[in-house]
Length: 214
Image (cartoon, rainbow, N blue to C red; front, side, top):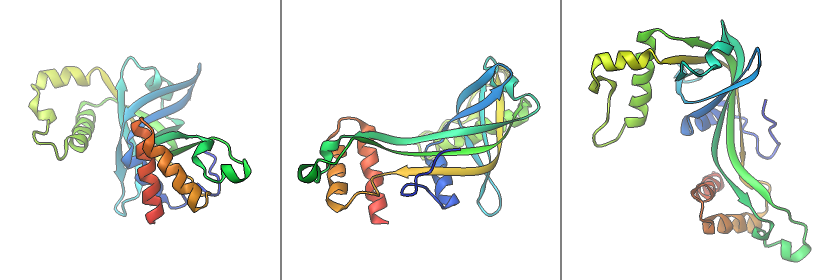
């Protein structure tokens, strides 16, 4: 389970689940007979009537050994990574006063633990693909749908994939966004990240501003 430093731990489950929803490309990690096996897949979040996440659903190629490692079911973890960025010690104005400053890394991440199972029923797989494309095509000028494709082509594709379902037992998240820094140093990190060329750095700065606004 992820180590949640006191300053950065996300203690509200709904907030932790929001990280998974915002960055839904997950890495599943499961222990197989020959060691750890990983698989990366976009996931759909399955929720109960209260809106709590109860399961994560994704899919992999049948050539991926992860579904064989799962067998009848296995304990697994799904890892989610949000924006992240290097922060130089030079970002802190206080460094000029006392020199006690070191580089760090700001990031947002979440993980879900539970029991992972595999499924290969055509109806279940099609429903999963429809849910995934519905999620990511939503709001587009010309949204694509599974129904746009000839049925025989869809059937062939379905035979080449396996579904994965993680029944979620716990969710944890970390938002390490310089919460432990005083005002001037916090602002210094913002200015540093705003000036960085990487999109992740600017996205991290945006999350810091959201945090600052409360």
